[in-house]
Image (cartoon, helix red, strand yellow):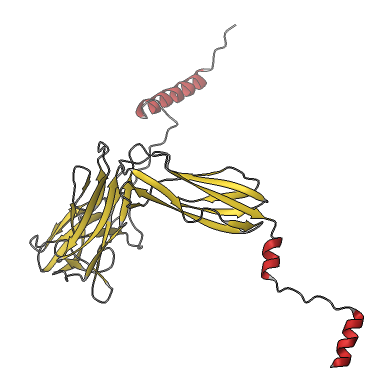
Length: 342
């Protein structure tokens, strides 16, 4: 059975359908999806350029500089990058290192304006470059490094630092030149990064020198050292239960030179008598029982080792030896007789 709509109603329904179809066509087939909002980049009100870190700029060294964009409310605007220029590259040059960062390098004595531009807005800072003051001394840290073949991190580079000191003990800024005494065993970069050569099969002592203004400092790098001996400062300590002591190990090469930084293994053979708190070249011994305990420290690569025999007592001997002996009690009659004599 079919139902026929009255003509006025049919015309109204048909018009509505046509309007709906036209709306879908105009919206690309989705009548319910609103248009996506358009995001606008905040307007840059100012760009602030400043040199980072203490001190000024001298010829031959570099310093970081940054440019920060701010909106009208003082908020930092993210997601942009800066371009850099120098008003006089014979005085100072500038090279971009990050979105808002750069490095300024002193080239000559004088002043130069360093400008950072972000989305058409610029900021600037005036840089004064001076001649470095010759240092009184140069200190390199760390002053010794040990690399051992076959151990974790053997070929990992290590960053050295050079501190320039004036005659009053203050820090100075100045260029530093790095030199390796044996580049076949270890190299050093212009910034003080030391990289050992893992293929070196012999024990190599390399001197890394930092030079500035006629002064120098050094660090000793030992590549693949051959351990000759391991010794401990205490070999037969005696403790009372509850006491602690520190054991310090010394590692030497085949020529008797002290090696620092060699990883050592500490083994406790009787945890009922002592416990160990292990460090790199030392261990803290804590007496927890009574008896004789053996502790061995060794270099796993060369098998050099030292044994420590630790005696732990109950503590009574220590107490009696430290106390003053008491005067023996006198018999009662003898005491009265002494009183009469007096």
